[in-house]
Image (cartoon, each protein chain N blue to C red):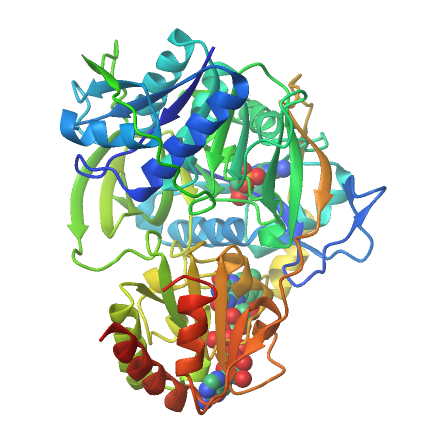
Length: 249
Length: 322
Ligand SMILES: Cc1cc2nc3c(=O)[nH]c(=O)nc-3n(C[C@H](O)[C@H](O)[C@H](O)COP(=O)(O)OP(=O)(O)OC[C@H]3O[C@@H](n4cnc5c(N)ncnc54)[C@H](O)[C@@H]3O)c2cc1C
Ligand SMILES: Nc1ncnc2c1ncn2[C@@H]1O[C@H](COP(=O)(O)O)[C@@H](O)[C@H]1O
């Protein structure tokens, strides 16, 4: 069993996002890039599965579509424990174009389980994983919060409205991962960091795919009205405002 | 030309979300001077389908279950894409919920149609086709251009008001047909908890953070939610500690919700928490620290001790109700 974890990197969530050139692009100065939180969890789960020899996981690889400046992110994933990495040397422009690049990685080296995160915390697309599955004509299961291997069969758990569902999936398949897949993201050990230096990052030529969308401008959210305070001794006042002013009760 | 809206059903019933989508599709079809068509897949009876007519839909395509045993995104995406092609859709509308998130990207690939997810208003312009969507977990919005002739939009829940506009829809029923239904997934087990208002459906959400102090203090919070017909939620540390179940965790790494009213009780208002709730119409904060960042996001607040304020709020709501 071979696992591929697709990783994107995103501005650290505490970054104050700013825009440049008349709000047409993200101002990258001072941004700390981190592995997208769900991808970190997918990688953690993939490594946990590999740790248990009974699961028969041969290797865990990571895939990234991005320019050379993204290599620190890839090295970090290798330091956490991935065996190998693939990078498509292309500027990510939209989900469609990125999925087409990831497809090329799959065609270069076969995998049984491909994991993507439920969304990138920057553009909040939630698109790449299912697009990739469709491009590869593979089954996928979205929003999975559990993944295990039982006698060679893949069992996933997904949250449905007001409950949980267990499914078996044929490989190869694309799993789109949400919270719960792993408890805490695994962190790199000193030894991992040393080993990562010599692990291979295979460079892949971009596939000819054009994006279907483009962001023209960014707008900061409209400031909310200042908070109106009710007297703590008289919470009924708050209820009255909610009822008659906001009209939400 | 047409605007197609995929209306998901839950055991044969629609939810408010479905009606929001229909209201939006009807408005958009007006802007585009074309007709809106609802597409529904599964076991839905005529009476239920007719309820979509309240929001102005004139035509409904109902595909009965046929070979489909359960929700499989690969199979459903084919049916939706086929219908969109047949009806010459120039816009396809879906929900930005789990089902929509798993279907829309697949349909986008099948039709090579540009996709914008989490759209929160009608298009900003039709030529070029520009929509506004949430980015950076609610810290900004982006105007996104969809560059193909067919476009797909998934709509952020609770962003649109229902628009009543009664119509008597024509229902066209056929059986979902797929040459070779994909069989990659098989359901082994379903565990359902029933009765409770689902967090993602709730119009009022009462949420507690570490300021609630201990898991034993939740009774008045739950009572407040019940009195208001709402759902309960919590911050991440609260679910990490096991004070509350994981399904209640809201925020960047938990659920993203947009109720009409969100009570943040003993929650500091970290950006990662706000990422999950900032699209709420109204935020009410109750916090003992007047400088807590949650008050910058809230429209209404009380500076005070949750253990005192909550029971008083419960009393005030009871009084309001009586
Ligand atoms: C990558 C990443 C992702 C994250 N994702 C999420 C997420 O999805 N959701 C999330 O919630 N967090 C998330 N976090 C954690 C987030 O940064 C905060 O740590 C968390 O939201 C704080 O939870 P809290 O407000 O309950 O607790 P605290 O920050 O400890 O705040 C408690 C609040 O209660 C108030 N208080 C104390 N006593 C009382 C009292 N008696 N009455 C009233 N108020 C009182 C305090 O003044 C304080 O404001 C994430 C963090 C990271 C790094
Ligand atoms: N540039 C990228 N390289 C590799 N994987 C990516 C990239 N962008 C997105 N992904 C994957 O797709 C998931 C969802 O991203 P998105 O559709 O952009 O919200 C991420 O969690 C990653 O697993």
